[in-house]
Length: 593
Image (cartoon, rainbow, N blue to C red):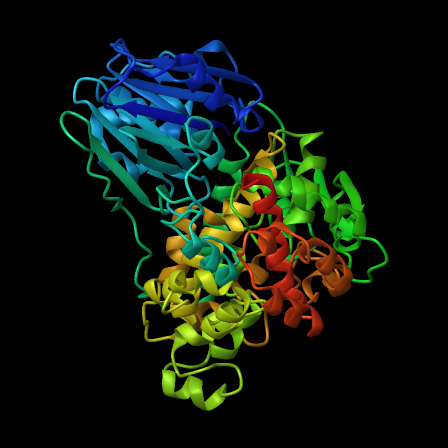
């Protein structure tokens, strides 16, 4: 895994020292090496920070070029089917000088152009500069596992793995977007294509930009290259269980490919336990890593220990206490944008610990979305119409739309328009969204089964924007690559194409996954209720902590939030809304002062 950056200037030559300084803000993503390439006229620059896994020699160094020096690449990710792609490209007449998956991308671009994207299996964000055509292709993987930001400012086009790299190159920092601030309070993240900064954008998952710089201002219209399939398959449960087994076995095997050892996060839940069990079946006894919380009877490390002992795996653990709340200051730097998920701290901690032993780990992201393991999916699993949703769940929604249901289920301290107006300073009310749940509405597609509708929302909003951002920044802050076998797109496409009756059982969580691990893991793990990667509620309910952070904070001093609104939240001990405000406060202190 790596850090990438690029700059294309329409006027003045790019300053090499400044560009390299931008590149090196990403050193944490790639501590193993670095490189930059500048075009002969210095109007184009690509940069790379390397975290090496395949072909550790200098031949794997980036930016990388083809034989003629006409096409250049900077790449962040892993292409798991690079070996068969390489064989196909060699048959077509292409010649390779390294054993990397990176070089496969170069020749795939030469052979198929943007059509290459549909052939890639893996996680990726990359930029390819075509010197002859004066074109730049930037692209991001189907689910958004790897990040990519871009912007066109002052006749300069920039792209990078993280916003801080772009900011480093600007003479003046852009203004923060108050619309994005409001979005953060609503969603716990700033949704694509927005960022917290005006003029800078996120490339959405499964999108690319193919930009011509041959003349005039570039066209920056992202194109989508992949969508979830329609649910159309109804195999027998036995057939589905077998197919999931085959696809998951293949995915785990591919995700273990590396010239350095790979480990695994382990929580003792279904998802991470399944991954280490599948790896164990393939003869890999992975080092495992788990975080717990002091004095908590549900602490995950104790369940991880049961799985590790059962499979005879090494387990590394660490306990978190209240003092780890101080990590919020570091997170404000590494996350670039405010991210209000309550598991950011333990994720950061377990990544730090794992990085001391391994350069890459497996992780279970994607399983709940695809196998229907989330608690908010269950109430609507048997329903087919919105009218029935209103009949069965009147206390859980405001209105009759699936958007309202989902917004309520996801909120963890809902900021609807009324609460936004009460919390945000009155001078900013004209910048509040008229419909705060716009991003959920954008990604709502009404399937015949409401469960499928919610699963699509989970994949494209909660997972794509929050979960995968959280795991990428926390791991890459420590030079650790996280691999997510459940997000193999062939496995995901198969699961999403199934009718819910095939994979959902009210009496059995994640039925198809359970059937494949029920004879491999301890019974107490299989019977364990669903639990997110969080700490005890008391960890997040210290109102004195919130008051100390916010009452005399930068958000109050900058007239971003209302003093009266803050006092109401403190008086009501509204800890989930206060948590989001503290995350925003830490971001404001780091980037706006």
